[in-house]
Length: 126
Image 1 (cartoon, rainbow, N blue to C red):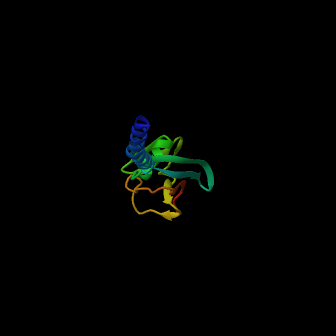
Image 2: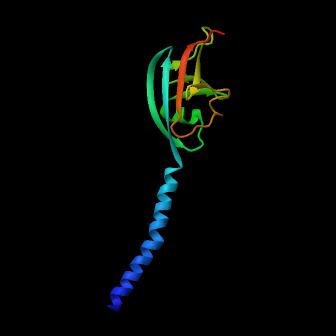
Image 3: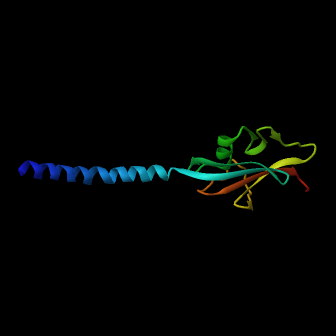
């Protein structure tokens, strides 16, 4: 009986010590990544859509580069895969986050979990 009591006490101690630590570790790892949905459009036609898993605190550019081959300069996107802007024709990449225009470059805009980023390649009429 003493052996069983010692075994039970050891087992309870192990569960008490290791179970909360494991749960905390799993929970902490879940909060380190976020999911962001990217949609690419050329004029009004959708050309791509992906949900990208990125680190918490990542920028629009970080997620975009994880999903596509990207060319940028100073935070401004000039090419995504084979779709590039054309300065002579005033065709540029612009982006919104959750349907709202952003007033900073893509490399400065930080994202949150479940954000929706839309990049659009179209003529600038300004």
